[in-house]
Length: 497
Image 1 (tube, rainbow, N blue to C red):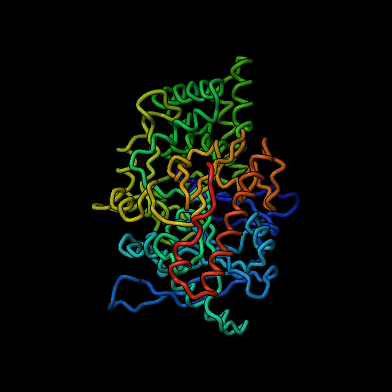
Image 2 (spheres, one colour):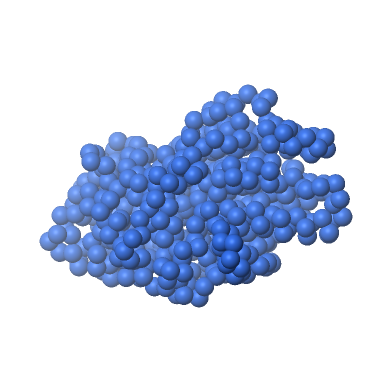
């Protein structure tokens, strides 16, 4: 999703009016620029959710927010569950999933992830109070919500023949939730689309940095590496002025500052806009201009300015703040430090980011922010879900070729879990649903801004074909009342990666 931006946010170009809020994606530093056209609806609905799904004695509940969109719904149509993730869910996103909903006559519903946005069970987000924040609890939230909402549909549309057909969608961490939801609750959904789904927890995620170098290309990569070495050297001799050049003098911890710079580079490739970074720094190298100053200008004008990253969210002291706010940084770090890690450390050789960003930096951050005993149980997470060897059915995995997060996804195709790679120069995180580039984002699902629109259209057609087949099979199985067909249909389509 980058300091796990990924799992950052959707970012939009607006012309006249902007509103500042957060949208879902992988990571800590959620971009803030969005317009009213970013959503199909922002009308809020609420229901009572269980706080702890795993306790037989704890009956506490909290208010959880959800959204619904029925403009494209046809009688007996499917329900598309658009899963929200690690940021405020302010409505149903107006992206390619809306195009799919219109095609299949589906209703779109979206449930805000527990703790994020307005769905926080506690006013004080202490480490003790965060113990109910996990992907496992979130999956049960989806299951309980589906049961609740199906009851509303049955009454509203007089559905007496059984459940509607449900299909799950998600990008990044929500993409992982989409795959895991189908894995753990196959009887509750006909299938799922797991876009840029980070299903594999990774302790030392060196492949993230390696992909940045590969996506940058030899020339841009070499300049980025030179900038990293220059900054490391200047940081040792004059830390304050070096940080001030980037507008980040408030970051006392050198590791926090270096993570900011690493993320600033990563998002250009993660969100499908590599030229906005590579062109100016390569030109500066050719023209003998100051590389550090050139990169600092990119960080301030693009990453902090256009993208909307906030310097304070890199400050560990800030992350200790237990009062809910807009950034969700503390919340996502808690999930990182307890479940999935995704520690974006520098490889031993040929790294783009500073070598000072290592596993010790991450572990120290987890301890400093959340206290003793907080450690990412990566092995247990992968045992529980299967990691990249996830063994489910009717799950579509999609990834962008330039996205560093794809190395935490399932990239090997199988018969009942096809995996498709969108290959192009600016194909990043969630390209199949979000388009290119994503800073700014073309939200309506138009692939024309991608360097290879045909590559996006091909994958989208494969998505349509799979959804069409699986919904047809689920409908037939439901009509026949054959549960085994419902759970295991979808064997007949031949897939290619």
